[in-house]
Length: 254
Figure 1 (cartoon, rainbow, N blue to C red):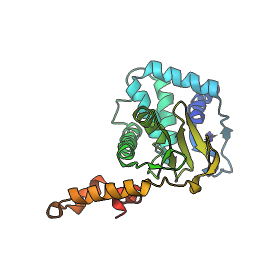
Figure 2: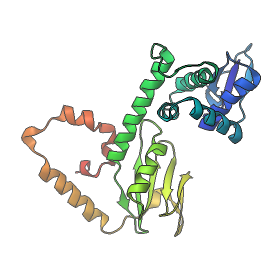
Figure 3: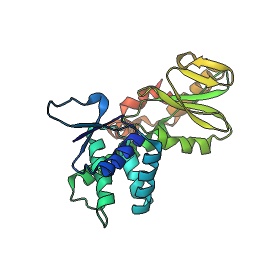
Figure 4: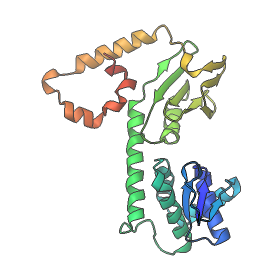
């Protein structure tokens, strides 16, 4: 039995609910948009349901330590196609089997999920360090990024706590959505428009504050002045700051 879902996390949880409701314990999970139908295959379309997803998540939280439940969500954010079915099978096992399922690293799927979650967490830390805000004339601090994984949901609380008194937007160019904070509420925005206090503004038409160029120049000068040419180690530097992030780093625009 092939289960097809919409690639959302709630859809993934709903698929687990349907598995027990239908007793399809040998089912495999695929994303609807990329699945190729088999002539003889039997398909079940998972209809994402908030209540069903909530029941499954609450059940996982009762059966797993919080850190292990988080690992499931973090691995899901990798967007790696094969991780969905592995997570589906893992969650089914958590409900069907007693004992510590997540700690069985001899299981290839468990090991894959654990390693994937570590990669996503590493990308999260990089984004927290590499994001550079720019100030617009509308007093909006905005930053763009293109992380390898969908880590935006993992970093918004960090920036909300750190810049609680500022209006800011972090936009993921690769996935075409962003997180917008208006000094009170945090919300998700999509497409190419931003709903801010001054009205609806195209995301590619944000006008920089007049002082922004000066701030950028000062930061670049500081970066050059602290750089010691004789101790330059490009290989080590690229290991910690991969080149794919450089176009978003002010200090690299020299």
